[in-house]
Length: 483
Image (cartoon, rainbow, N blue to C red; front, top):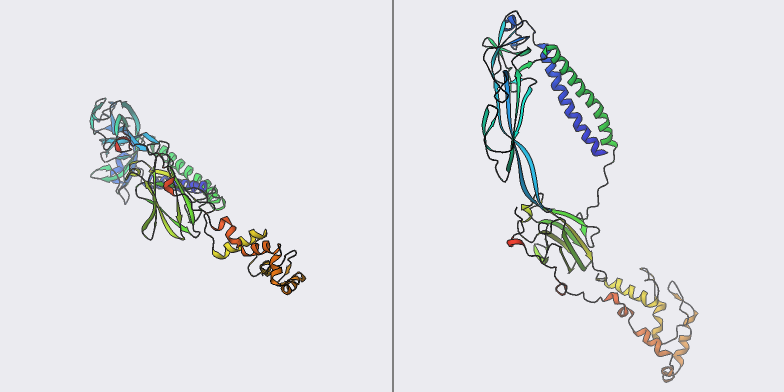
């Protein structure tokens, strides 16, 4: 809703601009003196503006070349249709478009007379008028010498990789008949275009009243539309909720990256910063997102630290690339591009990819303190003791006494420790003959930390032992297709 609000505000701004343009035009019509044609040259205001209305009397014959109709002014536009083939990550596609290949504008000198006397009008420098379309034809060939009616012109071949598919000719005129309203500047004993870059000779076949009515109507519609769109768009822009953005895994990469990083290569390498705080083995997997197996990105991954490459994956193919490596804590730079230099730059829109970084389970290197605590907890079937708690009762069996009941309260032991004093009075040779002492002694001497498999994980298999991705041969040594 928020984005829709911004769009409505932009439309409202355009409507306001149109409204002001129409308002200025209406004020110009009302401000210019409206006089009989016989008084036009002598009744202009301080700016030289004058307006009048009367029957058209051509001073020179002007014929629109395409339609052959008599006119006071005509415009011809030649449009060239083209198409071109472009390479994308989804394969070859055809783009179509239209360019203006040629334009021609021609005006004439004519008279306007309301019965009081004629006044000369010069329309050779362009007009501001509602033109009447009199010709529209399309040819199947797109360049060279092309004729439309009695009009012939040369159309250039389109540049670049465009292929012309046809041409179209449109002709519009101001008819040399009927009544005409004129507003312009008096100069050189005639009425011509107004001053300024946007100043033109204003002509209207509907007359002064009709032109004022249509201008006022356009102004009212534009301002009314803006008045409706501004509050609606403003409310949506302020109070509307932006669409929930998908989580971008490419931002703030650290250790095991949650989700998939979506990126796009257009020319140079796409780089990301990756922070490692947990020493472990990590698996990298990247695949192109294009539909065409040949044109899609064949990702090559390069991981560097302090400007030096520490690991790379370049045996990529249409199915992507995947590999595993051990990384120590630090900040790394991940660079991704295609295995073929410059391939992505030749594709319209570049080539997309998906990147995943996962920590290999069981390869995380624990700190010494955490590993010892976890080992003791696993050996005794209890949770690892919290920091600051005493575990004296668990170390007492080392002197060779039975441990039928071990209970601790803080750091104080219970009465179950008394049999140990009696055991010290017995002869050493008798104590050694007790069979029950040996298992207890063995249990005490065996370091529990060594029995935990997680403390000393087996080395993961080297990346080289994994079968490499099949490499698909590239046509002619270059993947770009030609049509």
